[in-house]
Image 1: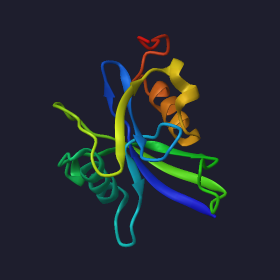
Image 2 (image 1 turned 60 degrees about the vertical axis):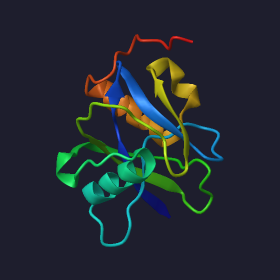
Image 3 (image 1 turned 45 degrees about the horizontal axis):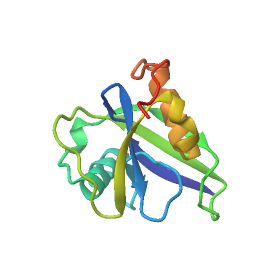
Image 4 (image 1 turned 30 degrees about the vertical axis):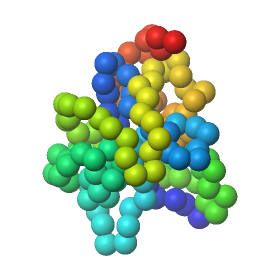
Length: 138
C-alpha cells in the first residue's frame, strides 16, 4: 500500500528546511498526508499552516516533482509517494503543532533525513536549488 503525502521544499541560507516531528528519529520536510477531497496544493497549504503557522494559499505553491521511496516508521505502507512543492516565503519560521524543531540542512546531512526527505533533497539538487558542495556549519 502506498502512502500519498505532500511536502514543502523550502531553501533558506542555501540549505533545505526540515522539521523534527514529535517522537521521530529522522528529519522530514514540512508537509503530510492529503485528506479526502483535498488537492495536493490544498493539502500542502493546510500542512504548512498547521506545522509552521504560515498562511500560504494553495495558489502560491508550484510543483517541483514527485518522489517515490521506501517508508520510514510507517509499517502499514510499502512505499511513500511524495509530491514536492516550492513556494516563496520570507520571514520568521516557528514550529507548531507536532513539530519540535526546525533545522536547515545541507547535502552533507543526508544521514539525518527520512528516505523521502533524502529523495526530495536530491530533487532540489537536480533543480539547482541547493549547493552540492555546501557542508553544515557544525
